[in-house]
Length: 212
Image (tube, rainbow, N blue to C red; front, side, top):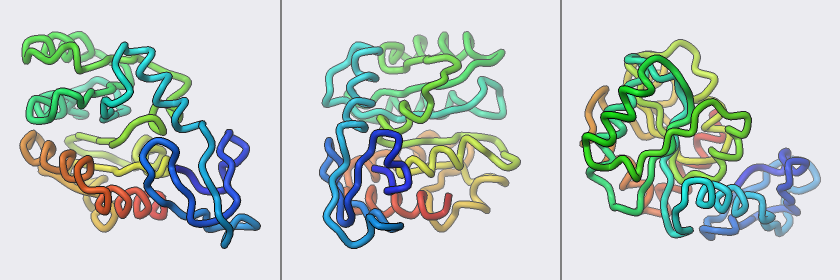
């Protein structure tokens, strides 16, 4: 869920604690007149999930791991695709972006036998909704400068997992889960940790949002 400052985007908070419609995790609306009162998130986040399910043709019990990045070697989608092999079959990957390595990654996902669980959504104008409807957000890069997509992901109050490289690890080490570059096993462990541990999910979500 999002803080009370996003109330104009269809999220209505009256105070704290509040509860996310679809997962029941508490959060806090910490600012302005909304602080200190009971609040509940509107149907906005549930609608985001429903829209994703409808678009890619999956059931509502699926989990979504999202990554927003250009398809280039530096962004290393392939490690994330390999990590998906180590996750439950109801976990799906949302790849948001375009670039010269797009078709190569599509072929790779099919070669790995998980083409039906890897969804290439292209360039989108509704990225915030896609992130809000996701369960975990990943950035699997060789290096980063100052990543706007990382900040956008963290501000959606979702668990953030990043590769332990310059531009990510040094900026979010205290609020995110990190894995070594190209380590699909380590990435899968991080994803399973937040999907399977509500306490970890809540902590990393709040910490990422605070950092952003």
